[in-house]
Length: 223
Image 1 (tube, rainbow, N blue to C red):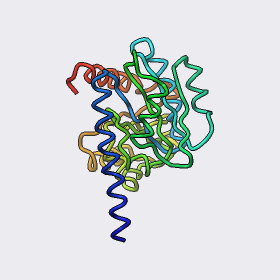
Image 2 (cartoon, one colour):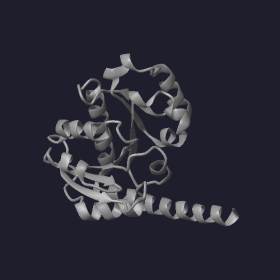
Image 3 (cartoon, rainbow, N blue to C red):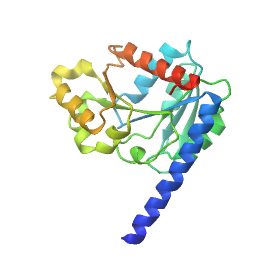
């Protein structure tokens, strides 16, 4: 048990150093990297697609789609006219800082304001590895239930913003918005929580404004 613990600790320490170095490099180039996480089926790609359509006139954006296999999401993003690459993780359920750097080298960050990394879909592994992102965001959909912050506390504790998606179906699910907010804030008092519906656009303007403000603050050195 002792040896296993030391190996795991070493892996995380090495990754954290790589992540910090990557973050500094991106800061120097004025490139904001958003790590977007969620479980499968939360509406991550739909939210991202709508975000790209809303912000592509204001920001120079590139997207990295991470999946264990397939290029379905990358093809969807490509239809928005956004520069995109697909990252295959070779069976791994997360991206670390080195994988992220490889993706950035492939897509290129010159003349880019914002890079969005759509991480592999699950609420466990992606939360454990720092990708070198400027900020972390995650999406929780109403059908998943309001208890997810209790079951997956690390994910909610590391995210700067939580988007609660699919609020259009609230009448059909036993989802307590107040209880969910409380559970998130108990684990992360500084988290921003925006209820949204990516499909109808409800609540999305607040998310767009937050993201633009974060990119601007990052480039001005005030973040």
